[in-house]
Length: 228
Image (cartoon, rainbow, N blue to C red; front, side, top):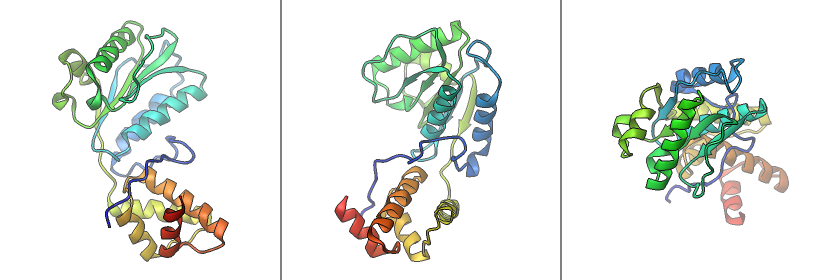
């Protein structure tokens, strides 16, 4: 059976607190300091930060977590990803510019990103960005690609299977849910293996098990998938 890719995110929303760093501890610590700094929109370091790595390595999680952390501080953020088709003009009120999945940008989106970047530098606003490749390998216009590469750069790695198992086990224990080794094997081999999807799968399984008053087993998982 082929893997089932669940197009769903973390139930509680991505935060720095629920990011499992694993081999990406340096990237997490950098953002914790960046977000936690007692800095206003006019004083936070304007040096850009770029995260790169394969899908599921946590890049988007970190960007969304940073965006939400700034919003909780009462700040506004300019956000652009490959799904945004009608981006607004740069706003001087933004505390930061966040660019996700830059490797997928169309020519128009690259123009928007470049304009935002130039204005961010003018107004001393930081830029957080992420893409699948290191800056030098990005197939983007040169002026945007070089700007993405002149600040802090972090290569992101996928969590290993032992780390994913550990995170799943801990999350299940916190819910008072028992996951057998057999169920864990099934989850890791039949579903999308990125941690966000696995956490959402656990959330759905917990709710379905409570609704049906059954333990989480492979038959229960198959039953749930047939009824969603």
